[in-house]
Length: 158
Image (cartoon, rainbow, N blue to C red; front, side, top):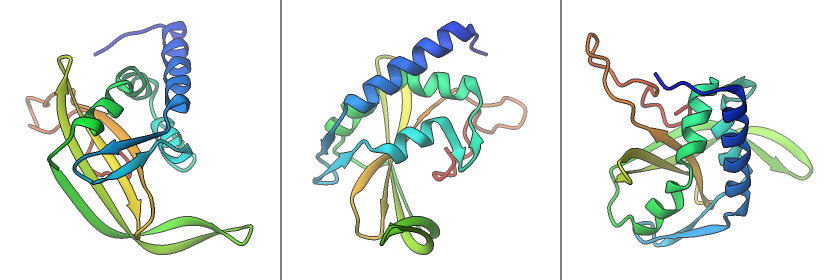
């Protein structure tokens, strides 16, 4: 289990947010498209879903490893996973926010960089813009249950 102080958490989170906001679009060779780093991805690093914050240790690891995300996307020539599903998404149209059932595609890129094994998830709603959704650190396996620790394999919440 990783341990850190409140001060270390605050510092890593602030640096991570600053770095994230400095990113623009990153070209991904596999997708043959640009992946944007917008508000949705930053919010997802802090919250599992709307109004449900992530644990501090979860946020800490994600912000600490965030610098790897653009590098992985820039060098990815293969895709490790894809999930297409229909989901209710909050869409802003005509100065209103509506919840509409849309086709959502999640692209998964896994890499080992600088001794860190991470999974990058890119999200696309219908045929819209592709954007960074999440970075999932791989913390290992639970020896008793043989399940992954930290994340549950659900791209919407990971």
